[in-house]
Length: 505
Image (cartoon, rainbow, N blue to C red; front, side):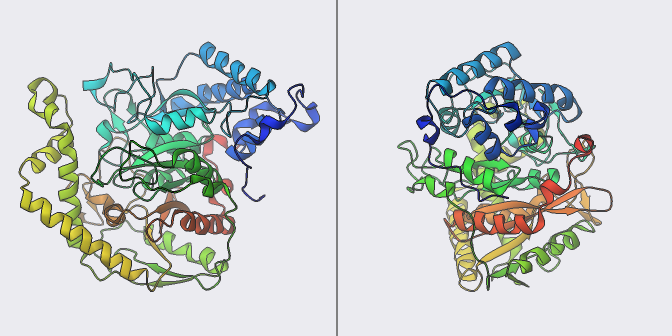
């Protein structure tokens, strides 16, 4: 694989306006193969005008028509004629030297928890089934500014709650590795669309693993940035962040460079030039120390085979020079869970007006009602203590990073399960006491705000995928991506194991 550097934004604009498409011998032998190219490779083909934006759009739309019905990943798909017309505009722009950016002409679908102007913005809820966005969220504006054409939305659980993508508006999303099973969530539609090569890259968001669990269930790459890396409104560092997903770490890093960067609307945003993520990801990891927390010495209920598969990834880390050993932070995991619950309950009180209206309350899923009702009972003292506990937990992880360079943890505690099951009621004979307890493995790192890469680790004997979290020090997003890239070169799971529907290509 070539070094993942696309070049500075706007570089292609220097190409003479009269340059036409190269000969067929320099183009893909079959345009249908366009969907199999990585995002960076596709960008180069478009930039060099070896394929047209119209060809790219039609190829992807044909591919979506063929495969989306099996997984229900892309929803609210726009009219083909409109999309092809926009692709034609992109071709004219490129011919005249007006290069918008590395996503010039890309088809892109936005997660249905975010606003994309003119498209449905349902959040998977019947309350908002008819809502149409009248503006773009900031990261969507940035993706459009980089040249992407928004083709529709990707499916998500109702209000994004639960790591299982189903809702009464759009239905249920499956993993293409077994279409009877869930794609995870809440970025389940984005991950399944990526795995089936229906989009080049995808955006997602993550409070409780939504950029980590779906990549694990779909054999793709996700990245939860440091809190504030991708700017968001507000003065309180709640758990949710927006981030990139892709089929390679290089593609994910490039999309992060588009989504990230300071903005005046984000008072707590990280003020750092996101161009750093467009540079080489190569780095020497000889002597790197990595801590493996596993199931926290049996604290986390875990399905048989998950830990073994995650631990099999250690060979790849060792081959790139890392030393992996078992170690835990000096903090009780049950206390982390309790502080997580309080922050989560507090965060869901943003929907309190919907709860107080009887007409909308009856349309809310039980899990959201539970979150709000727990939050209503919180006191100022509860929140003060939860904030103090979060500070203490962050300090414990900071202390751990004095000894270790990175931390590894499973991305999930179970393999993809039956998509008709809302959530696992028990794991390995242990009852789950909340709808999200089965994803507790991701909660500690949400609470610290550290950057986390979600990387594939392979498949069990049923062909079901699993993943691992790579956690780095605060604001060390580039360092996490660099380790993820080195691991990817040693493991190569995304390219080695395609979904069954794509294996005869």
